[in-house]
Image (tube, rainbow, N blue to C red; front, side):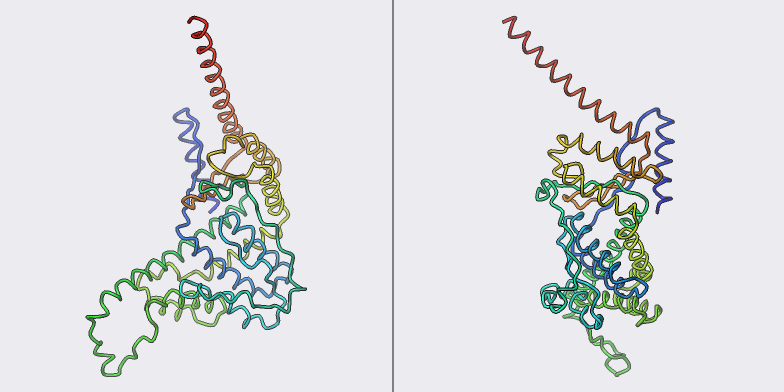
Length: 364
């Protein structure tokens, strides 16, 4: 993933050299098509996180605070249960109420009654982000990050994209089933008892799919059986979900790095500091008023990540677009100089207009 972005960066720089022009803007633009998929992705990641026996409870708590709190705030999504923990010995049974939420079961939320006897052991809640103009429809978040943050966001997006594809396939299957159900004849093999009818309604395929992914992560189902069941439900399009277990495992490792690595935590702390100062997001309509703050945030990030790749990452509430741009020191300076030049030019134009109006008034 990092190599992909570095290649895009090199190609852009070659074009700039050939054309003697400056090129800025994101190298990658990603759209999160459905916020409900963010919920399903988060549930799968936390489900697998709980199974990591090599991680201490404190480490798991940090990762879940990051996933349920910080990440949800960054995506302008509702927070998860940030007070949840891993101190329960009967973990498997208690998590069923929390992790089986999906399209068919979101209406019956049982999370409020879980683990009431463990309140004293729960980790402290993380501070909720209160970004400037976060309720505005054109709000955005800005973070300057390194390779680890970039890789996590890309892997997370890939998971969301594959879940959304499966959900889309399920929607198509349901629509087709509703059309064909009235006129369909009973299959011969089923009529002569050679094949049992499918006991599961197509409307529940996506919910069952999420359960199968959890079984695969828990090694309760063989990969070949898992793939066969997906083919039965979604046909050849199901291949996009064959390696979700490996993808989720990578995401869990990456989220653990973001929650425990010193530099990654410094990036998060810098972001939270800049949120308070107005340099890491707000409303697009008032972005010009935060130009100096955002440039200051960029300078601080260049110092912090002087030995790392530096990424400028935006998430836009309107359209749920995530944009990623790989920067270097010279490019960041050029971008800042261009923005300063545009501001100076606008000020000069305003002064010229005022002078012209004054001369016209004197002449009259």
